Length: 217
Image 1 (tube, rainbow, N blue to C red):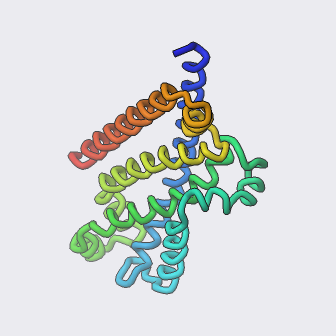
Image 2: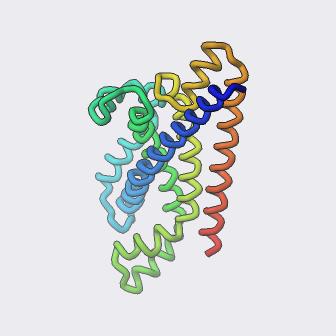
Image 3: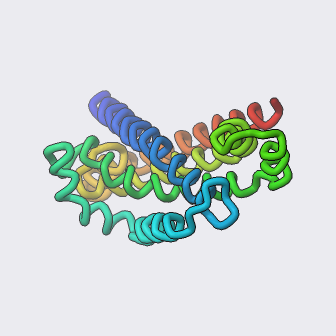
């Protein structure tokens, strides 16, 4: 492999990490509060508000049902409004976040719902406020599952960022399309696939290790 191609792959890896990292962080900051609202406003929740729960759940489901490649194109006007361009890694972060936030919200919701009801009832009986139950019971007890769910979300984002490369977002996906596919450079395609496998495997291992550490505390 030439030095130029090595530098190109290194740049693509860096762009993929930026897209995944920034959109992943935004997805966490948006998705976790969404999950908490979905759980606590449901029937029997500590902030019961069924109407709010149904409306928010419908919005989350609607966003999750749109295929990413369609969402990528549909939000181009919003992307241009926010970042001033529809191409490049920063433009890709907008649809990546919109796609990943509701996905992570549903994954985190599952973990939050697995918190045993007697723990919540015991906290209530001891006079804990609803916000205290949220901070001291719901989030700590579900944290290992939330970390595992966020890891899955990051892995999904890596695949989505590669797909975004097909429309000029940059990253490893863009390199695979422009050089590996359009210019028939098979070695480039193989290198991109190997890098993605290593990246996903490493991220999954770190996420699983962190979830185990939290669970054993």
